[in-house]
Image 1 (tube, rainbow, N blue to C red):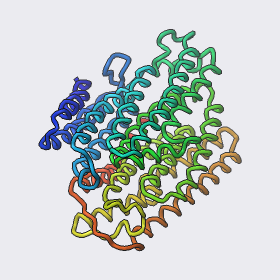
Image 2: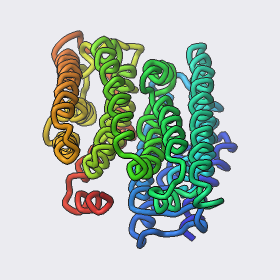
Image 3: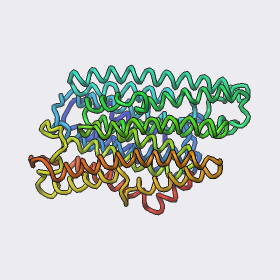
Image 4: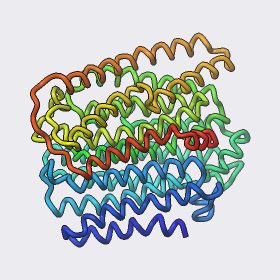
Length: 471
């Protein structure tokens, strides 16, 4: 029944997108909101909760991720209601966006809720292909070029993931047989896999594919280029929803890899993530516009989440994951106002607002800008404290304290560069440049408030207790 409720709003959204009538725009947004209802209902069920045999199983981790994604989807739908007031959008392109948004949701739900490696891959590929067409909604040469670039990079990444899954399946099949495709079976038999080298090679290739899809080293710029060329709701979908589906896969695969050979896992992830952070920190320092700045910052936070999760800081990783899922899409959606009238420079972006909605807008965006660099009381401030604590605890238990301290010092140095850049940009946005009047509409302000409330809700006692129960 819950599976039907998850699919029904998507089917309605897909059908309504063919009507091409202005009166159905509100219904399209309502269908996006309707996805939250079964996500909440699924969160309240006893876990594990089978949705489709052993293929789709809801547990605490993936229902948490699904709820985050559904809230982001609702916020994006609110922003879409006033998209044409900030940028030129052909009416047919607007409805085509929702058509592929519906297909995107099918793949997303399949990837997040899947207990089967094959279904996870299919869902991720479906979400990737539908996103290509959402990028092309912006009828510019740059958007069409970046859509092709995204398809090429996405094809490389998804091929790596598929090849890695094949190796993982081959490594576990002597023990599990056909059950080797299920995450739960792999987790239960991880200590009995007869070919750990084959599994580790598969895990490394899968991880590289997933990290490439999130803009990790060496392909750090393609994601920023795509999000710059797209409409800002597409960038919000990338940061708040698509990356969530990818990280769920990383969580699943790495849980098995921890049992197979934890030292190999930790070494591989730490080197990869630190190298990515090193490159991204200096790219952020040189960023000249909002979309690239926020996009590169998203890569930074995904690297931190991977480091915390690998270090055993499950609670820290999930808290940081949730905060990023709310704060980053809100900042992407705010660019519709910040960069209105073709103003892509940063100085004075938080000036020129009139009325209650305008003043509330710049206040919320200012707080989100400071929250993304982990200033208290941002959830990211607490997640990083717990995350660095888990890294030190891991080093003590493994007798690698000097190496871990060196890694933490490097991380703090890179994070200080990013912190300095964001504070500098905030000061420029608020106190420099000329004040040009900008219009803020109720639906986009509602989207920002929805995300701000969601981020604050992560710090409530019952939210923290739920995250600890996952850990």
